[in-house]
Length: 157
Image 1 (cartoon, rainbow, N blue to C red):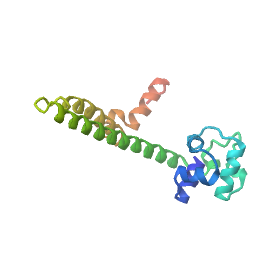
Image 2: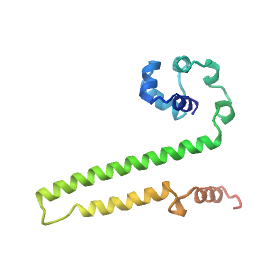
Image 3: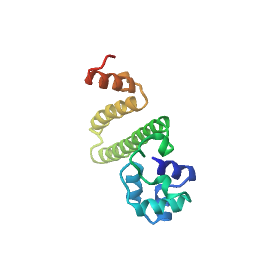
Image 4: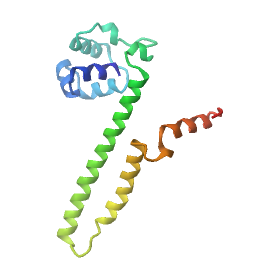
């Protein structure tokens, strides 16, 4: 999470950071997701960010937000932004695919509008996804998740 925070503070994309550090974009993505990184990768990133290697070096308690320089609120904010990004990618896929189906349908069989059925079905999925991301549906929100976890663990609500 620290690497992502530093990258965003510098205004760099993952591709730009990869080019500057000599590390693959895939490795940058893995590190930002919290997967372990090699010492060489971390040294390269420390050099690019012009910080001491010990700041980003993993330790036994490096997962605590205070050590990483990332608060719980920032972690939650990053998670929410990722959810919103996934929703918009899903929406773009919907628009592109349904548009292509509509064009194909109108060229091949204009008297029979069959593309409406996949648009309707997938549209329900899009609305459900939007509801969960933007909390339109209370049973898919964070409060519901907390209650479900507490119930599963047998803790009082």
